[in-house]
Image (tube, rainbow, N blue to C red):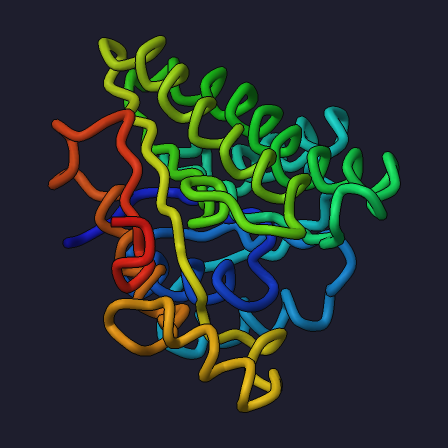
Length: 247
């Protein structure tokens, strides 16, 4: 599934799932804008990994929860590559707690980083993609947005909101050559989760039908499918990459 001559923006691409997505898209031929907020060294490492493998990438700093910075991000992409064909809304954060203990600012921060950022980036992307009457938008939601998780009322709400955003935007632009889909990962091994206590990992494995955690590469491949021309007749869908948790 080639992405030659395509230009992609991946938000939150300096580590974890975003990093894997950026590397996968570049390996398929896309020029990738590696967005990051604070981790410049990590983002530059992703760019170096892509260019070392023969790909093309640029790191661009932007807090995608801020409208002006989102506009600057897309301007940088268009200035560098002339267009944006693919947007992957991956930037996200968590501030888990039971609702009785959760502070309003913890709710607001997660909604801004996860959901507001996706809405702002979708808005900017549509403006660019409409000119070419072509586009692929992929929102990285979560199994928490599909079935909910205790202690994650803010996170689950933000990720469920991304699914609603996906479906509504897909309806708005289905006749303009722009598809909008979501990928909902389950428990995935990343730098943030690899050091969890062994007993907790076993406990979580028990609720995953396939009996293991997913990998960032498995999520990236699902995203890549929605980014290609082969998925042109698919829009407004949510692909659960969760080992069967939400079935």
